[in-house]
Image (cartoon, rainbow, N blue to C red; front, side, top):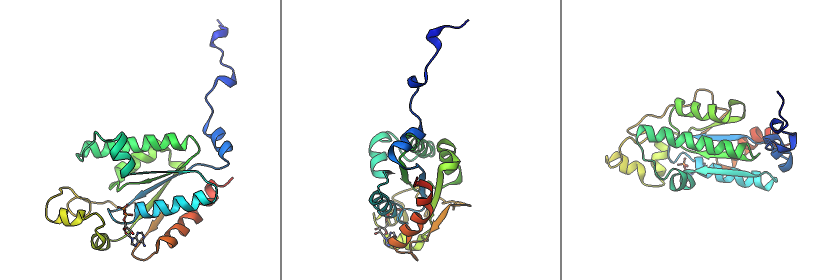
Length: 200
Ligand code: ADP
């Protein structure tokens, strides 16, 4: 039996991702950086965001600083917590993506399984995996945060690249070795890939 209270007219529905994209005049994608600590993920993410912003494109960066200190401040570095860390990052990213925003995540995300989980949550068709493939020796030489030195001394256990494995992505949308590319060159390669996908 039809009950008119159960009929929801179209204007009662939540606006869609497409509505948001129309409003912003852009299409959203997920740029998922993966790579060793110190490989250049955050540096490139920040430079990329500036270039996209200059072109009138709205972006959101998610990185260790705004995630580990906030939504994930109850998580540690156990295997289960590392997976939960990435799961939440992917779920939060999806909210931004669904709001039409170009979302950029910069996390080590060291194995195929966690990256696959993130892609499944976000949707493979809008998930662009960018492998910052800077060799370990170069990352360790930079040692921006002094973490490699600590890991070598055994002060940090399960440190990716030193005492925990990093699985290179098999089919990244793009690979950037920052021992060979300047930040500007990396950003230009990214823009070439991203602009056709996001501009309306
Ligand atoms: P991650 O986010 O991967 O841990 P960061 O971006 O925090 O890495 O650190 C990378 C470091 O390497 C920064 O200090 C950056 O200035 C330096 N660096 C040197 N050359 C490059 C390059 N060509 N591309 C990116 N980063 C570079």
